Image (cartoon, rainbow, N blue to C red; front, top):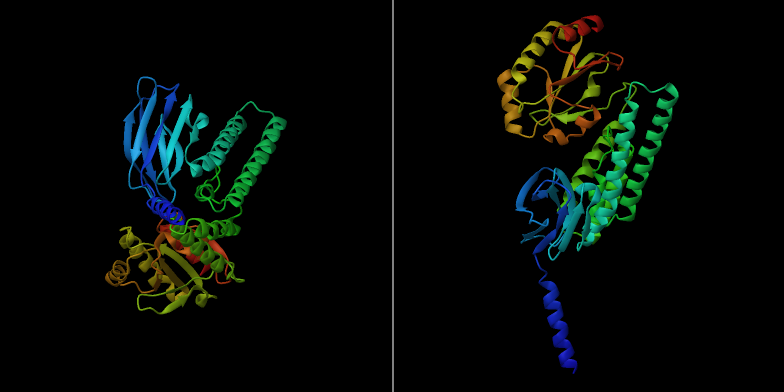
Length: 376
């Protein structure tokens, strides 16, 4: 008997170790004119359609996947212009159905992570729709001052309530991939999750919990990379001196470290550019003319390349014979200076006075030269 029990236990262990990599998604969509359902695989970087099917006459559909990871990954059911998020893993047998507006009315069963994600997403979508409705009323021309003020208060309160619910969901479900999805959702007009630099605590909390629950998750290295960037930016901002600008210390093409603060007491043009963009030749030619004209009077150019290719950056610097300090950390858009200095486009610049005050941003051509002449 004991032998039989051992054999049965061994069989159960063998079966559990051979977890299915297949996923079945079925359901029914009614109440809209669209007749195609698409399956989209999503990542932090892109989204791509991987399958599609036409609805049957009564609105039913079925999609099948194979070789799906054992850890949940983000997919979307795309129907009638709406994206329904699902977190799928091998072995899931999911039912997704809706009547009318698919995003507002959908239901999901058969996938634990997708059901948890539904709890967040359904509430979040409805809240964002409510926010947009208030904003539409706020832009009306026939509002009285009292009505406008009342709507503004209502908008602010609702927005704060949504954020609090979002943060509570993240903390309560920190070991779930659904929390990763919630981390990256933003309300209209918001760049940050909650409060800028303090957001890192939420990313770190989720990353530590996911490392325990899903150590093989593809989202774990992405979270850790995000945390590293945020930590670096916080460190950079903490170095703000009486000069009123964040310190930058990076290597030049020979590996020698240069710091922006070295040029305190001089007029500094902090210039962000990219050899990879391909428009640097004309901009740098203009800068060389300005540099030659005003360098002896106290102008310094501290140039930061937002690049990832060391070879391309060095070749460009040498070909254009740039006479000033040009540095690069080879992190491209992931460099902490991009966030610290709010670099939205390249090239971009800041003109910094001798006493450390920022005199202007993105000054080009005649405007740049006039500002230099006035403050040199």
